[in-house]
Length: 250
Image 1 (cartoon, rainbow, N blue to C red):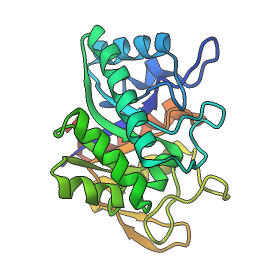
Image 2: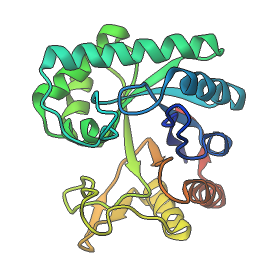
Image 3: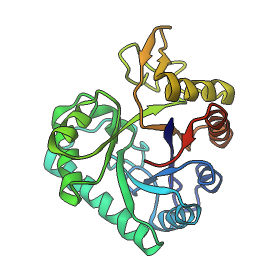
């Protein structure tokens, strides 16, 4: 058994710091690096890519809505052509920075509200897939299992990476519980670690209503901006190791 472990990083901006990227990059195997639209600035992205390269961690472009004020967590009705351009721009910008630090963009993961929107939003999902394919048809796209965006990507021949979230609550339908609802974000390292092992070994998670939901994931995510993110990531990595699950990038 093996699984990838990813985290959102590079989300600081100027003198404002968010999360402990250096510590996370010593634990995870893939780094979802902000591209400057929902978070991150050029200097932050340089530092983050350099740290990822030093730790041998795979770099992914975490593309989002143009929404610094809302941290990319507000849905925006973007015209398809504009979303296509925004996604292509973000991938290209991060890849250029990554290459100056001895690495490159190896996959694309939408962020926040965009990630959740393209679980069902046909038009925006199509725009995201088109942008990724225009940059590189073989660049993998990360998304929620069963989402419209992964269906469109697979149909077009783009590799997909199915993802599960160890620190987020699930609905009975297998989608993420909105952050506006109580219990949406988990912060207990032991609970999160146990969920990670169950996801990786049994391919299941308990939904917010107590039902069991099937989870078929290639990668597990720990949010870098969550309180105690490093402690949770360490607990998850240790639990997976103890369960005999090899943690490695795909």
